[in-house]
Image (cartoon, rainbow, N blue to C red):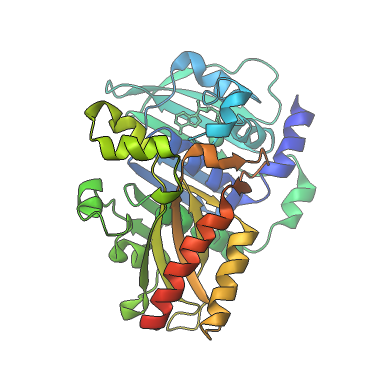
Length: 360
Ligand code: ADP
Ligand code: MG
């Protein structure tokens, strides 16, 4: 199992930032509203993620670090409509195979949690020891690749590895404005992004889920007047039955309506900020950061048509799960969307109109 886990680690644990990404996704899947990330030496010394999520039951802690143990998918058919970020049950096991991993968790407010430690070989079932811990989970990953010297040699400088980590934290911050995120490097605070409550961000139905202030914080760049808000209603593409449900006003249908929402919102911005640093291009589908080449290529063409050298963006697609096919790819980024042509026609139309009236 160690070898298999190390092979899995080759795909999942590609560098310190990949560990940070997996641990952040776990914290979010656990419903955390506040997450702290503590890094030393660009993640090569330590990566620690502290969350205030639901925690792990003591009986499940050993399972959590065992390969293919996931509490998130009952059966493979569920993969179609998956709503959690993790589902392969591989990240913790893979990380534990190539680092010294400590898992501490508590599910209640007793102030007491359980701790479990693993480093490489899982010879015996690891022992749980009681430890002081608030409700939530802390995962500490030390000495990454301590037992795989070749991988250690592939790591870049502390500054480069930390930059990758910071990028990941910013991407998560852009996905989840409702979560407070802190990032510390060698004990110095590098980022603090306070949660924006759902009420305030969705008070106005026409506004993006992501307020500009939080966007600028998460990007680390001021956009001033150079951001364009995008809102696209895709409800015309929904099945007729869903439409009648929306129009019917029957209270029992509340859940169905939420499930059947189809819209895109977000922001466009210039390709460079004031300091001539490239700003990101990010696509989120149902909260998941994805790569979708058809969409990104079409967005690039739109910029050309508008005689821009390009633009950056964070676009949030909220789509019914029946429109999505999430590839079971190790990094879970690839996604197939249908009816993509219709969606893109709506999005392109909206963006083209905006670019005609406003300049970035
Ligand atoms: P996956 O996320 O694909 O299920 P992981 O290896 O990342 O696989 O995690 C394994 C399991 O451990 C999860 O399914 C979850 O039950 C539990 N777990 C991991 N991290 C946390 C956390 N921060 N809070 C609560 N449960 C967690
Ligand atoms: Mg996970």
